[in-house]
Image: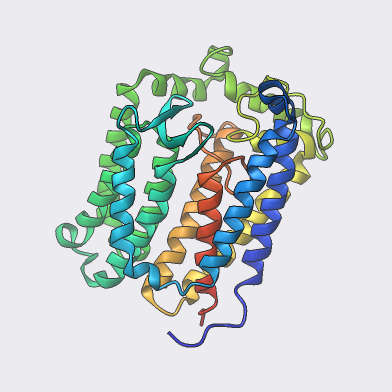
Length: 365
């Protein structure tokens, strides 16, 4: 593989740490009132975020200093473990229901989300599979169908929880890897039409999803029901103006905006720090994605290139969906903002994934 560079990509590391720091500050600001109301402790959610941030940074340091091609060796085992966990979480008595979805394994307030680990497990396995069988990817049956079938299986298990947001991120990152590996655009277009039809079926099959779609089109039709979150998010963003109301001065976090420290934390950023604060966060994400894609382009082998692409795709798609929901461009899906939102499994996994990306950058040509 050649000699590693003396240091990983500094821009990726700096953007990651900057976003993580902003996240810690904003999690406290967004959750202090809720923390005291629910737990009698203004710092409850901040303490949890700090714990998982420390665990995540340790994981990032470990993966940053672990040669990335070792993940190729364990890709199959990792995928199988993730699939087993996705099945286990659906079993009553084992899986824990939170926020209306059976997505968690754990005890009490601590747990893991197997769907989060499946995102990385799928990225690693598809990178291995397509780097070894790249010559077949232009063939529909032998090349394209196997990775799509694996992706579909994982997506189906995640949808049984149900968790459309995480499923969408997994599909987005997987399709990006498949496309970059050389899949024919015509084949993907046909499958896209089939997928769109399937999505319509999923929406029709679950009344709450149909309500979210109608609320997305006109949230004021049901301002106290399906459109409530979207309206309260816009009420937070609007008053923020150019410079915001000031750090800690949000009004919407006073039990108006649901989940201000997780799914809708960008609303609080826009309210307290204004357009300038929101733009800064977006610029940091864009720099992270840019340097990540540069790492993918200059990686020394196909596996490293596809792995970096998948990690960047996972982060980028999740950012687009989260902020799209917050500003009213997408229906509410329930997905966190990477590195910023309060979260356990998601924060730790993102930081560990960025560590892998940093390791790949050490071998860039």
